[in-house]
Image 1 (cartoon, rainbow, N blue to C red):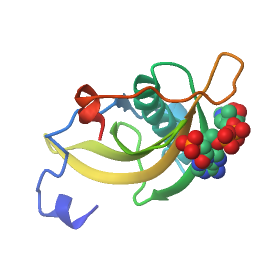
Image 2: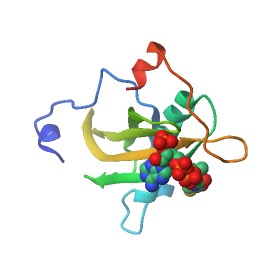
Image 3: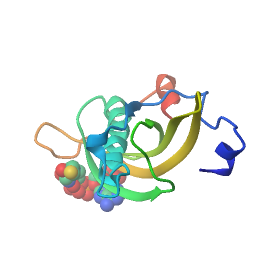
Length: 145
Ligand SMILES: CC(C)(COP(=O)(O)OP(=O)(O)OC[C@H]1O[C@@H](n2cnc3c(N)ncnc32)[C@H](O)[C@@H]1OP(=O)(O)O)[C@@H](O)C(=O)NCCC(=O)NCCS
């Protein structure tokens, strides 16, 4: 449990909407009984893919996970929220920072903690899977940054 949760402060980001929210279920556990890291990575890839697809206005493919850090374990029953921000846009690629927070029910309260973060690169692709130039985007897409 982080210092922030021990002090009872709510660190859950209230000024942003999560891109993906899901409850961690018993089916997602590893042999230790905690939530399997591969399942968390899949949720992060989905969240990053959602914003990349919207920005690209079409299909995208994950080309690289340039960094990932698992700061804290995730437990069954945790409410998992993936927050995304576009970090960089190239000619065909979109780099997305994904931050994962959990909310955990304890004694009638929801305690928040940041558990994982990653930087994932997506490439806009044509129907044949080849890289596609990204469209120009205006202020409507500012919210993704
Ligand atoms: C994604 C894919 C179409 C890119 O094709 P490619 O021929 O490698 O494309 P390019 O070399 O022209 O690179 C395309 C963009 O990706 C970026 N890129 C490629 N490899 C990268 C890497 N390892 N890290 C970061 N960016 C990378 C390039 O810099 C380029 O960005 P830009 O156009 O914005 O400058 C191809 O690699 C592919 O199909 N990969 C498999 C995708 C997939 O199946 N993903 C799911 C995995 S389970």
